[in-house]
Length: 131
Image (cartoon, rainbow, N blue to C red; front, side):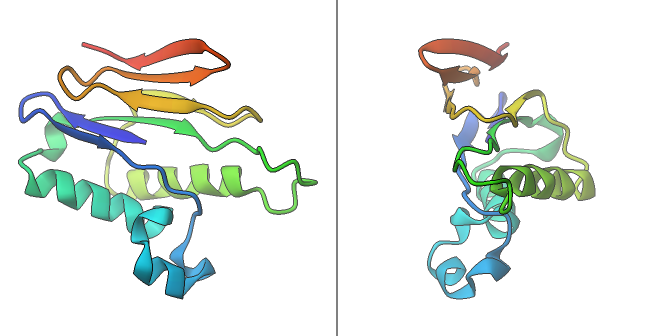
């Protein structure tokens, strides 16, 4: 996921891998950004500390695919998407661009100079947000 404040020119990208820190509390203490429920709040707080304001934020999401090739038992991608949306809903955060789900891996990028966000799969780029 990305966030960007076009006035403060503050932005970044968070690649969390698991939905809940409760899955591995020791690892969560070492690497809180690895988990949606600890990484997302930390990401927003850092942006606010750098001058971003909630009402100006542009937030995009990409990923959350089921790529492990399992039988659907773990559903990590689905659980990550659910946690992201739950956190956003509780905090009144709207998603400006979305490329989530399915079974394909994506690469996400943000250009801090103008906040442009894109996702890429097999060389094909999709613009999620631009001014």
